[in-house]
Amino acid sequence: MASKSPTTIAEYIEAAPAEGRPHLRRLHALLKRVAPDAEEAIKWGTPFFVEPRFLFAFSAHKAHLNFTPTEAGLDPFREELQKHKTTKGMLHVPYTAELPEALICRIAEQRLQAVLARDDDAFW
Figure 1 (spheres, rainbow, N blue to C red):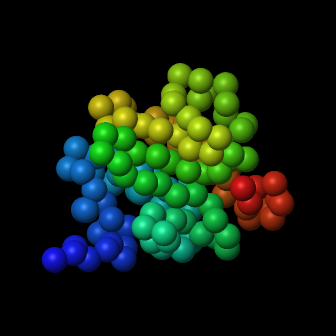
Figure 2: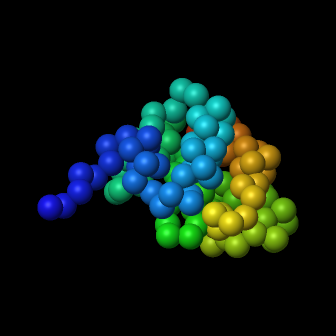
C-alpha cells in the first residue's frame, strides 16, 4: 500500500529521515519567523513559502537538507557561503553539521525584501 503524500510542512517533516527532523523543524521555524505572512504549501512534494510569489523552499534528503532561496537569493552571500556546499540556488546542509541559522535568516530576510519590492531579478 502506498503511503499518503504529505499535505502540510509538518507532515513533510514527520515523513523525513529521523536524523534530519530537528534541523528541518528548526529551519521551518526560522523561515516562518522571517516570513510569518507567507503562504506555506507543499508543491511538487517540497515545502514552499510564497509571498506573493516564490520566496524559498527546503527539502529533506537521506543525509542532508537543501534550503532553496534561488540563485538571486544566494548571490549576495557567495563569500560567506564558501565554507558551505552550494549549487546555483541551494544551500546544502548535512544533518551531521550545525545549521547555519544566522546566515539562513539573513538570506531569507533579504530574499523576502527583494520579492516584496517586486525586484524582477528576485524571481529566480
